[in-house]
Length: 450
Image 1 (cartoon, rainbow, N blue to C red):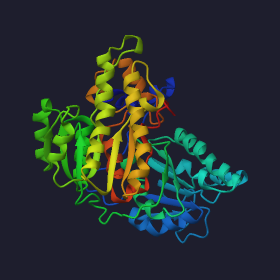
Image 2 (cartoon, helix red, strand yellow):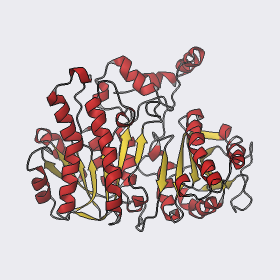
Image 3 (tube, rainbow, N blue to C red):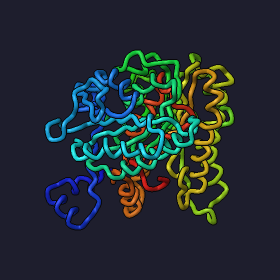
Image 4 (tube, rainbow, N blue to C red):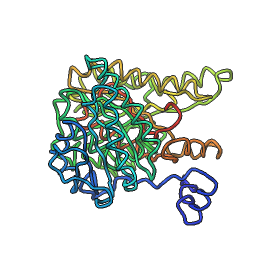
């Protein structure tokens, strides 16, 4: 369903009324388009500590325009207020901040630049995970970055985003993949997020097709978010097996044919589902995306056993059973990437969704619990938690709830299935093993769970 308010708010008449009445004024978001050559189309400005110097070495692969600001150690030309171009991306390395007095460097870097941001600009702050630091003062300063980055994300306008990456001491090699995501339109609906990057021994060989040669399975792939995930993985070079219930066979066959993939009609809750899946995958898998899910909403006082059991079975138990079966049968290759579709409801809870929220929170727990074991094989498992995404399900919501879901975020609008798919495609890359056991919210920095 299209967001008519978004279109109205960006019309000539709409802008005047929205400003006069103090209503939300969401900006159209720039999203990734086929044929784009670089992650950043416009000026990238760097500043801060030593990691800024590392980013400068890879900057030519990110953008054709790189500048420095307040950092004489960088070789890029200095950006000058009033003379330089509008800014499409900012990267500030705050990993060197070791006490609270040094936090003023955040204001000194960002304040002069914010009024020069282009529409849909992307800001990334780099730091060190506080729990890894031996000095208490440094740990305090690094923890302060979370409050700063999330507040900055809520202050930005015109579709801009801000995110924080805690970079491990031996994790610099994972920065390029992360920046290719967070500085590009692929992260259009991701803001206010904090991720930790660790060491990853594998790397992307071809950035034009980062998933080339990798075999992927996507459940719930016949339509909506699942179909978008399959399309995006295939775009990035993966060979895709699309799984959905037998009732969706027609839609499943159509999208599989279009993508050159394979359709697999299977009830993931069937007693023999694991056996059927193993038999259907003789070559094994590099990527698994557990997207299949259902809702059966009722307040707990009115919830039937069937409503509870069916949601937990599809959303939580099936991913556990099928992933364990793939592991036991040796069908998950070394350096595999597993993504679980959670939800912001699993983080914040939601009235009338005790069963759904429990299942989605359980998936987050599954990612955290299995991460250490999978890391021994170079594999990773993460959860992606969408917020309000424009699908047939949200289109059926009452108008008042639908509008609230759209507006209660820093970006003031709903996301698209593509936004979720882009996040999963990044987490599926060989180099994305730098992220493991974590949750990435694709929610426009929704107030729910913030």
